[in-house]
Length: 344
Image (tube, rainbow, N blue to C red; front, top):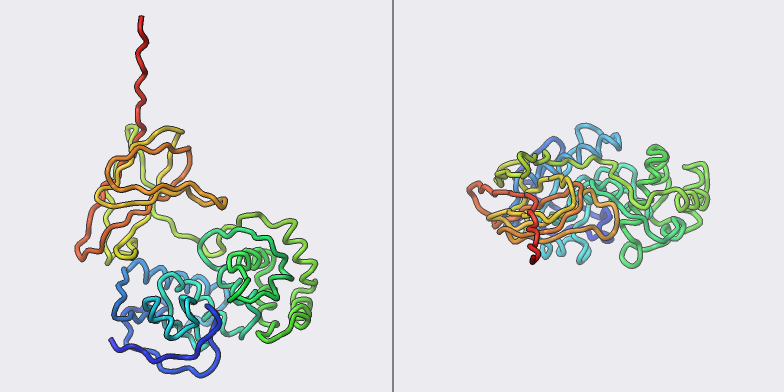
């Protein structure tokens, strides 16, 4: 596959300004709204491609984007993306409907393209809106929105905190949130950006920011729904399942340097549990994440004993890449503790 020539560099992960140069049009995969071109070094599973397309479709519906608008995604390795975007950005977007991106930045960049009809805005709104639409929970930070409005994405703006605020604002009024984005220009100074907010929202950012700091929850659930796998079921006191990883299936994702699939299980009571994920390695993570220090443990695949509290967990199964589908045996069951004998 021919490598595309460089296009105009943008700030961090924001949509790029300037002349659009040639991007490859030899599309490897097409979905409802997304066309994907894979760089020579990139391997993608069907689940990755479907996830990008589903996210673009869901965000487009929220934004009211034209149903016939398509997004061209050039998916490359980090070193290749750095040739076209700000170094270490992970990706960048063009208003004409194309992005160059790594796997990790793809969902973020898709939002920039879909918001391009609103024009360029201040980093708080551009990066905040992209993060607000991400399909995972976001945590509150320490800064007031007025302070975030003047922050630079390359230096001090926290994307997660900006996303948390914009997600909160979206829940107050999606229409006014998009109106603020549209009314604020990229090159506005602080006073102009504050005046634009006042006009579009009907209240000052100082007032809204104070309300946000007082009322917003520390953790905010996604606006765009997160798609979970079916829950694994217990039977006769244990959980047994055979999980199939197949790169051509929509439930399997790429993982450097292999493939992954996430399944979910409920732990009924506190105990030591025998966990097996052979032949896959795995991460077991409490789910959903509701605080900044979630429980997680790395599993090597063979039988391991882990103490678990009651609740739901995500089990992220990871194997080396293989063309043929591979079956992973998952086992979870409480370990019966032996009672010590006491001398007569």
